Image 1 (cartoon, rainbow, N blue to C red):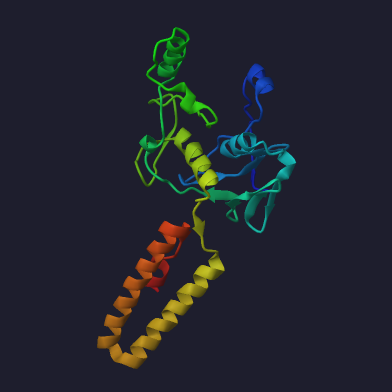
Image 2: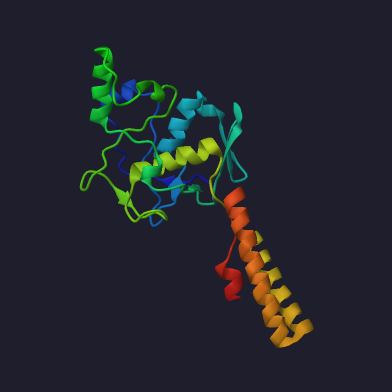
Length: 239
């Protein structure tokens, strides 16, 4: 799967492009705020901005990126892996609103830098930024893009890239079940419901089915909170 095809490539200014350690696309998956295309092809494969930042941060070569069996891995760092959907995207696991990330105003950081040179204690501890991934963006109406997320209706686009990096570094991308696994699970759920009704009758059987539904919901919640696995809920219940 070669992923998405791009048109109208817009590169950074030449001076910035020459000085940069890498270039990644900032496109978002249309119609879904929780997905980011890992690659967009336009003459060559352009990685997602967050993926390129991760590669540079970890000091990984471009040819060390391997995508196989719906998993992206780095041959030089086996501790990192990204689950890839069939459409070439990753499913973000939102851990909070934009306020869940450590944020500083640019003017505040610049002022702290000048104050430190003067020997004055700054408002921002600049040493806390050492070794960290720092993302710079303008967040404002008419100046940046906002999307709807599970945490807030107006989530800045820069937050998606920050969420991508958080999920990659902490290995907590969402992992939806494959269609055949979800279909098999739904089929087994339907067979179990029919078996319960045939054995215990409609009255008692309905109570047992309600109990099974509650246990299934609790099991799904445990898988989601502990292992980031998304279990189908509506499909088995509707069936």
